[in-house]
Picture 1 (cartoon, rainbow, N blue to C red):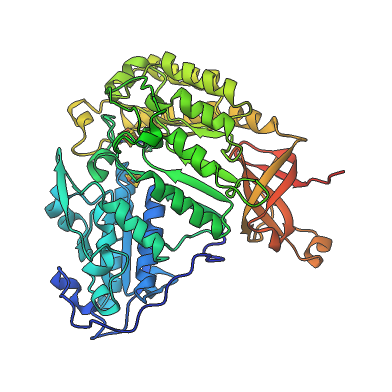
Picture 2 (cartoon, helix red, strand yellow; picture 1 turned 45 degrees about the horizontal axis):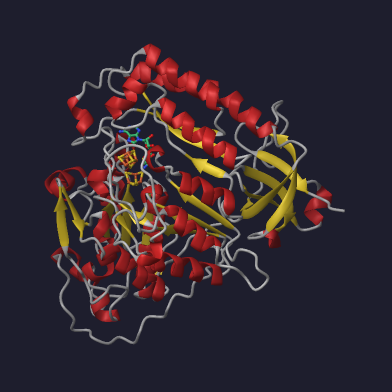
Length: 552
Ligand code: SAH
Ligand code: SF4
Ligand code: F3S
């Protein structure tokens, strides 16, 4: 459980007085009833699935709706407007949304003015008819690049004045391959105006997302993302640094730079004299002229360089996700080693431990190359925590090839592995390969992999026993309702507070170490948002537990 929207730090600008009521009608006749002259502004609920990118996009949509004067509903059934931000990475993610169409239809029957908007990665222009068929309760579909138009398309902006869009709905699109996307600077521009107008409703008061690059240019044959999100478009360098400065000024302790491939940041930006020293080497994949353009290393150094009056980093912790092994440059490794705010954690998806499978996946690196990069970065950043993603049962994956993945896990000794069974995605290049590993074999391989990784994760966590780690407290954990604290294993979950602790106003807290480990502790609720040194006393496979360290 998280503490949710505990301390909203960004001021949401109050809606301007109701000027311009006779603005243009919304594009979609089905949502016209939302025009505020005929009813009160809708209470909205945003249902977010998928990755951090979606969570960040949802914060922006919620912010725009709040800035338009709408209120947030506590649940879907209390809302007049449901915004579903979908994920399409695996069939199961889409199935979750399909599975709730009946419930949504019932809610709409009970509240005839209720409207459902669907956006996110499951919405692709080419799929429009199929979408209507699969998601019958949805009134309006918006592609991910159309999300900034949400308020205008609902007819809310015409009554409330323009909300965060540069000159209203941009609508300008381009077609790349089979994907329709907003023109290159569209999302960057709308994001910048949302930040300027305070129209991003960040869900945490402690840790902030900061998108730096949209889309994906890679060629992973199994993946829907390039089709859903279009090609890579980097946000302008200064805009990102400005947003980081604004985040710091609002008291956030941690920033996570977001993108499907954060370490290809900047290749599509114009060269500039001030970046003349940048000579980024590319290790694999399409050769690009990367000279004189900003890269992730440059961006990290600039954000780390934002300092408080006493010279410490204005943002204590800087993270970035996701990195692709192609572009993990020596410049980035050096920046990670040099910048005190950059956390000692790296998520570096490997997907498979077998070169032939990697080739079929279109990953464009070999295991040898991957291991060379890991070795280089582990040398430069001691104590680096490394996590990865693995797909099991990809097309044609033989038992011996799966074994290579297990051997890789044994060799690398990851702190955390996110593994999933391959799920064929319509329209991706891998649909031309036979999805020939049965679901039983996929499930068995998945279990085998998780069983192998669990003791490795435990061992990695046990290496912290007795040591002090800095924890950024981000959650007040509600008391547990059942009694099985001492179940034999070194539970890393919070324990019940004893009477003395209860009387002293202490609560269960949790947070993350710099290595991104979940750490449980007991302390005053006022520690939420603070950096606390914690001495680790217990280590489980998935979390640590400790007590505030006493110094001196
Ligand atoms: N851009 C990131 C990951 C984005 S998707 C990267 O390149 O690493 C997150 C993860 O979902 C991927 O790393 C992959 O492991 C998994 N994934 C993507 N497509 C999948 C599919 N069709 N079936 C199963 N897992 C998939
Ligand atoms: Fe998908 Fe590959 Fe792009 Fe990651 S890098 S989003 S896995 S295509
Ligand atoms: Fe899912 Fe889209 Fe993220 S497919 S994982 S929400 S980029």
